[in-house]
Amino acid sequence: MQKIQSKEYFDAVQAYFATYKDPARVYTFLLNTLWTDKYKISEKMYYQRVDVLEMTDNCASFYTGTECTLVLCSNPENQNSN
Image (spheres, rainbow, N blue to C red):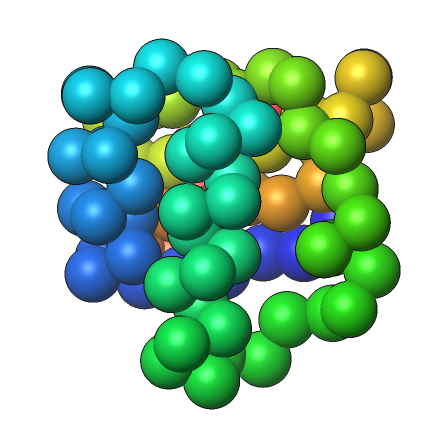
């Protein structure tokens, strides 16, 4: 599982999720944003098929089945992934 802490990325994902509720589409949006900004992510993440997205006030957790693939938090203090 990869963890990213960025208020900018979290806000973008939260806004995108408000319009597009599909977890796979939100995950692809995030990967494309991270790639454009040259953020360091593993190549393996591009081959994940995300089917569940759990949004809280401070974190977005992306799951492939029951396995958490990526956690994106707006700030480190509020990183409470279950």
